[in-house]
Length: 115
Image (cartoon, rainbow, N blue to C red; front, side):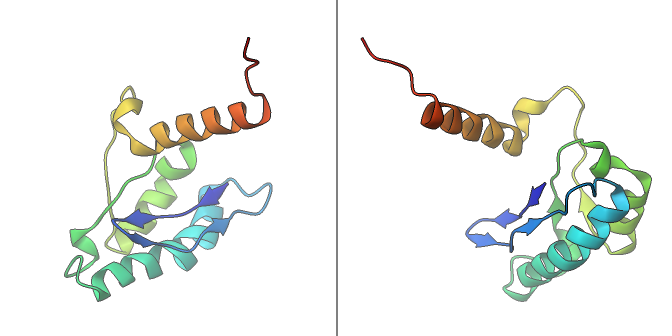
């Protein structure tokens, strides 16, 4: 998994999760602590928000994101998570981004023959 965050023109560093680490504790140790917290603190520092409570983390409904331990960790660090309905992928910008990336990569490596 590759993780990154954006808010307007501000981007986080990209984090590549080590292979085989797909548990919520791995997300916390490899992404939330070294990536999410500094990113949110930067948003506060530049004046996007007065504090972390004013920001909302938007993730998909992957089990690693919805696990009780990741939810509790976010609560303990004053990070609000956006609540998604399970059947609303078209409203989630990351799902549309994945579709576009798949389309570009597919056409890049398997271009349709003209003629």
